Amino acid sequence: VDTGAANGGVADSSGNGRAASFESTGRVAYPVASVPSRYIQASTSSYNFDGTNDRLKSNFNKWNSVIGNGVSEHGDKEGTSKMSFAFWVNNDSEGTIEGYITVGSVATADPFVTIARNAANKLSFTTKWSGGAESWTSTPTVPTGWTHVVVTYDANLYSNDPVFYFNGEAVANTGAGPGSGETWEGIDEGGASPTKTALWIGYTSMFGQVYGDMKMADVAVWSSILAAAEVEALYSAK
Image (cartoon, rainbow, N blue to C red; front, side):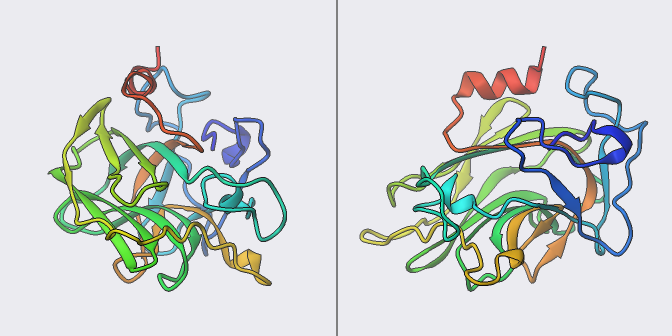
């Protein structure tokens, strides 16, 4: 998602046509004076979420065929069960839950992936396995001010843990993870109601479904695992 799009639009700069739309009572603010780095923006701008009802929704609903575990319910290639998420974030407050990204359904009963900051200011990554939702939490807190966050996860094997990065450096995380014999449930696509599922920015399906009170920029998703050198290059962006 290119936050430098004209007139505050939500274009997909990857060229894959996965643009997003505004999902809020009022339009997500587009402050031109707030920017994490002069290297990474097409224009000096970011999205400002109010923590109440602001979120962006990708108009693409075949995520199970991209980062999921099978062919899309709506017909497409098979997903990789691998994913990398990257974004810049600047939280407006401390000690509050902030929703960053959810892929899949907004209901935790359905297969999903979600990234948030918990009330202890730590990064949380949660996804659904056959035994239930599994979560991992960063050991350090999310830094204040503009922070580059990357989460990578390979769901092809139950024993794999996600990798978290803050500002180009890997940070420790903890989580029990799924048990032996469990299977990853992939990404829900809504069946006959695909409009209920998407990639949501500024929102998490966990913690009682929470919006984010923060600024975000340059959100990106890959169907592969970014290497540490690639993460550092994204952060440096020079």
